[in-house]
Image (cartoon, rainbow, N blue to C red; front, side, top):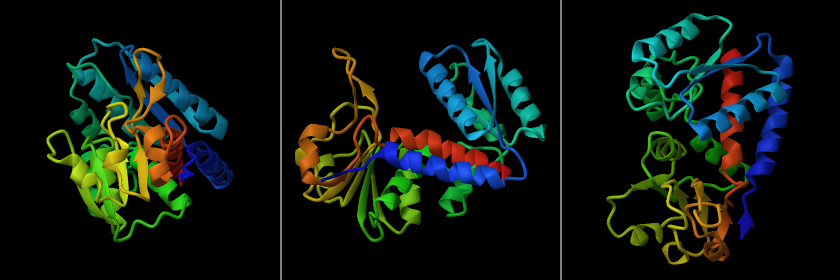
Length: 275
């Protein structure tokens, strides 16, 4: 079993991005919109701000009141779209339920949409033409490439169908000539499907859901899940790591696997907006 080290790969990508920054004629600038006071969102935004500072990317946070109306949120997005000094825009989710996040994503200029959530970028991903795709799935693809894991013609099973991970993950794998099966909460006989997989990507948000008896010998297991156990407050993935690891050829740990790749992939997208 080989452990896929996301910290190592993200550090390597970070150095490559520093080199790119040296040669830019235009400085990238990321605007992050955060609505309300979700504690996790605040942590994530702070991490993005810190990484921007380390890379020399301009960063601005727009913290909006939880009671803001849709037209005010849209107005800010339109102003940022028109601002030539802002090269990249990100709407931090979740946002309050009274707001329509899909309409907000749709309003972000596709050329500044570094999360890849605008419907135009979603469509381009399906056509294999995407400039910006959701960062976590792209980070997974970077890990597979770094560890020379060939997925062409292989059976890849994606567990989860969210717009943030599952769906774009499946599309990226298809674009790389994998044979892809997407499973979800309504899938019957899940274990029978996963046991046929050469690569399993899990993103369902259920701790230790994937067990050793669901994985075939020599499979590659990518665990996107981040779950906090209520008793110990320990962070674990969707995969029962200790029991699955000896059955795999490659596996990502949680934490330290896919997680570090998400933010560094975002930084790469922000730099693309200025290139």
